[in-house]
Image 1 (cartoon, rainbow, N blue to C red):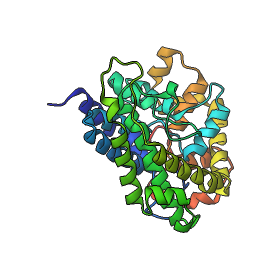
Image 2 (image 1 turned 45 degrees about the horizontal axis):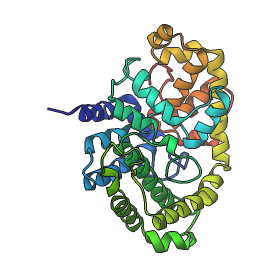
Image 3 (image 1 turned 90 degrees about the horizontal axis):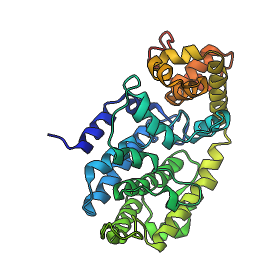
Image 4 (image 1 turned 180 degrees about the vertical axis):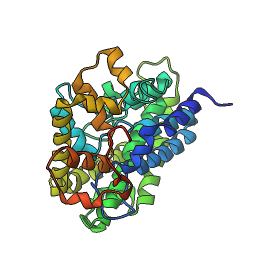
Length: 334
């Protein structure tokens, strides 16, 4: 009854890593409010935006949805703060897009993986963007148009919901937004998302041309709208992302990841107990890899709790930990 891509989508939605996204940071760590975006709500917004674009371009909606729902499964706790610290501590480095692929290939279902199609796996791997802008460098472009749609949909989602969250938190006001972004994209979140989606569709029809052409255009934005979107993105980096990464809460989150890494490097069997012993014994995976997999799979609350248990480190964020985590701690009871 289902296509291969529909099965991929369902396997992602039903996996444990997907459920944990609801307690993982998007930008604001342990926010004091119910309406801030989490990694899960971000994922759902990306999926909806990507599906709208794919439907308008007559692409494969099921493939698009599966990529979108799986693109952030490997994101560690505390958002990009956690990713930066793991990249510093783990010698080979850490990229959440690569970890997302590792989750679906190797970590889910006790090391069996989800057995996803190549197209979904490839789209997950190539969804990230660098600091230069919301469009990809040629080497990072997905081989499918649906994967390219998800990459842009990811940017459309976060530049808009992060703007709304920053306004909600009082970091910026509507009047602070760059004039170019407002005049080109719109004043409200709804207007900006509509402008971006419409422009992507209008600018990407050529991408549906013959596959045989090696220089076939990809999914794109028109130059004026791309400039305005990058303007808003740069504004968020300067006024929101960079500022939020300097807060005490961000430094506490960094220290939590450092504590966890140092502790489990010296107690790797405790990390192994929470993961698939078969996975690491059969593939001869090193202890560092095991520890990174364990930490990257943690929610924000679970990371705080484990750090408090294994170290004398205490922080004021402990009183924000969700009550569901207040039972006896067990590394194997996640």
